[in-house]
Length: 374
Ligand SMILES: C[C@@]1(CC(=O)O)C2=NC(=C\c3[nH]c(c(CCC(=O)O)c3CC(=O)O)Cc3[nH]c(c(CC(=O)O)c3CCC(=O)O)/C=C3\N/C(=C\2)[C@@H](CCC(=O)O)[C@]3(C)CC(=O)O)/[C@H]1CCC(=O)O
Ligand SMILES: NC(=O)c1ccc[n+]([C@@H]2O[C@H](COP(=O)([O-])OP(=O)(O)OC[C@H]3O[C@@H](n4cnc5c(N)ncnc54)[C@H](O)[C@@H]3O)[C@@H](O)[C@H]2O)c1
Image 1 (cartoon, rainbow, N blue to C red):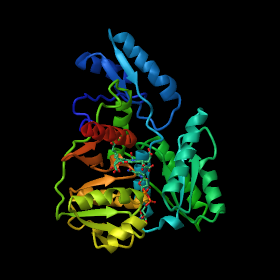
Image 2: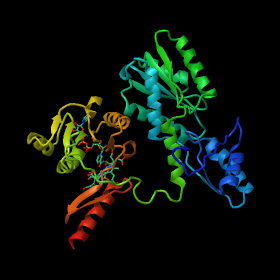
Image 3: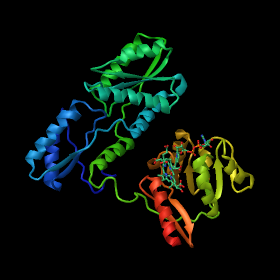
Image 4: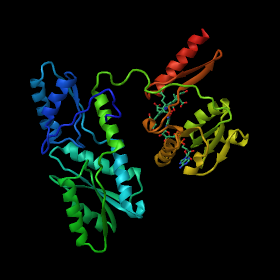
């Protein structure tokens, strides 16, 4: 978080079991840096800590520091970035098993707050939708049902013999210990099933992203004015550009890339009729298959516009690791470039980029072009 928010001092406080308390951490930080603070609960779900304990700590700090202004951010989950981290831990636990032969039992904390439990079931379903798992069974370690052994029984009854148990835990502790014990106990009684236990989420970039997002959400400046990107004009003439996907988004963007003289390679099993016509004219090279990492080649710029998030993610990952800019059409912030709404008029190129509000950008571009005309 300190890397991501170089201008905001970051302090840590604990709800229980460790020092300093949230009240102490908050009062000390406000004493040192001024009376404005944001408290982000490092909590995956809403339970008693989020709903009453932390607000109580904040109230205590408010009374202790004159002029204190403390905002309280939302808890972390459910958030797609956290699912990225969960998927990474699951994949690390697979050890050679394939997703379609593996059932996931996804264990949540269990809370007295029904919405928190429903959020966990929602996440389990999203995991199923995003991957190719045989199944994803939600379970709870405490308070509510189904328990972990019950969920394992259900998976087993449905035919699962390769099972990864993942606790939705931020760090190791009692909850992860219980998860291990219950999974081991169940596995010992089911010799014909193999059970692996995935790691906790742990400190990772995905988690920091979510904390930062929750922090920024409560700042009065949020949403930020203007675009968070740096606008530049790229000279693409005779430079390799890679486009993934041959659908509507690619159809909109390919003509401009060609006008800029880019040497275009387009990887996609299918093309829209308009793109097909351009390919047949030899305007770009079409590689009629799904994306492979090796497609990156010498591309200076990558446009990941398939309707397969896994392929888009693979492309933005490989582009990132090779320092090439990459647009993610499906998940803007997972990429490193955004496409402006653009038009040529009167010897100028007008480009408008907003904060992920493409319709507004388009409308402003049209208005500017109209003004130039008059
Ligand atoms: C300006 C324009 C340029 C161009 O594409 O040429 C452009 N999007 C356009 C149209 C458009 N985009 C979308 C719809 C359907 C929904 C709707 O109707 O609202 C339509 C309308 C349509 O298709 O008619 C949906 C959408 N867009 C993004 C996401 C993902 C996300 O935000 O995470 C999703 C959800 C996808 C999903 O659901 O999975 C992301 C991006 N789109 C951007 C640019 C970048 C931000 C620029 C800015 O904010 O200024 C950015 C951040 C990155 C990028 O992709 O480069 C072009 C209009 C120009 C013109 O019309 O001439
Ligand atoms: N950024 C934007 O402006 C914007 C606008 C609309 C939609 N979207 C998002 O972008 C995605 C693409 O939108 P679209 O309307 O062009 O979709 P589309 O369905 O029209 O086209 C998707 C293309 O990707 C190809 N494809 C699928 N899997 C592939 C793979 N593994 N490798 C290479 N190509 C593959 C398909 O064959 C198809 O040509 C959508 O899923 C949506 O999330 C973004």
